[in-house]
Length: 289
Length: 256
Image (cartoon, each protein chain N blue to C red):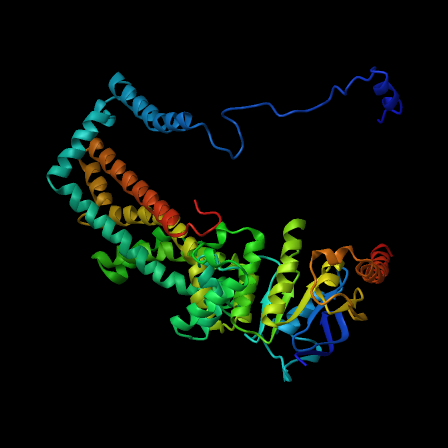
């Protein structure tokens, strides 16, 4: 309701401001999509590792879990990790797992990149492949493991094939989407500068896609790590997954924990390295992280 | 004649965006096309560029029928269309690189056109570091580096703030005088059109046709002070009146 007398009341100094004014309160922790003060950021970062570690340690030493072998304390897991490392078992496992992940991912990307660009750039490509890719990507990659074992035997091939296949679909779709996000005006500009279609793909679309490719790798390498462990659990002589499967036989919980942590640390290192790469090489992008 | 638009009609399904529109741009002329929203003026420019094809009629550039985009018709878009991963210099030289010119030749032309747009000291800067007005100057330099028959501009200053816009208008006149490039520009800003043009085409709204063609009579060397002249104001008002009429018709079309 509008007060018709407000004008006069104001003049006489009798006007009361409305009591339904809504203002945003100041906050430290809950500012939406804004940064925290630096010390707080560091504090949270440290706590996010330290607190779970402390809880783990407390549970393990309090003897809540019985028998105690089921919940080794952090120190014991560390010691086991060091022991495996010094025996040369852990470095070898890491080497095998890492090789499978990288080889599988590289092969998957080598197919996904051209196909994704083809599908994102040309309607011809999209309508020819999207229905099939849409169907295949809902088939869980691990379900293909037995098939690959039959087709490709027991060596490295089936594991690498599984990772290549598992990351191929997501990479294809992410690359395709990346092409769609390139401004149409930028492509039209290229035509008016005299570019033919081949030049547009090679000199405009491909470089514009670079941040997308790095970002897709960051996300899909995590999937690759999942798949290598699945493959190794099923059939392998070496590898971090195999080491975990072996530990099960003699209830080596500390060994399982050590291997799991190593897997996590390697994954995190990749993530941080790729983020650094993105910052370093794609500083031209408006939204470089 | 540099550009001839000959009875061009463009239909999108049952909607007619342009209806038997004809206009010409002479060698070395600066012509603006003004129109209310829905006059299909951007569609017209895209057809001249060859990025869109007419349903009937044709466009001729230097006598040859336009069948697709080409480096003889450079274009500057309203959205900043610099290649973000290239330096300013690489952006300006991109058209020449596409044509396979050697590096030394490219560098010479890049230096010349960066000088024309006054951005020589930003040669190694990335587009991200530039303001909107500077980005458009690079885009203009990039189009000019190809030495096109005609420079097509689709509301190039539409996204700029008023102060920058005024500077850019004087800048464009300066570039036009120095290079003698034929320019066909689309705008909805009547003042801008009168200030820049030698001739103006006023379009009707949906479907777009030429309502009036008007010669602008102003001193040869225009600076910003021209805008204070009574004759400038008068010519501006004339075109405004024509556009107002169209806008009213378009609004009625919406309410009916």
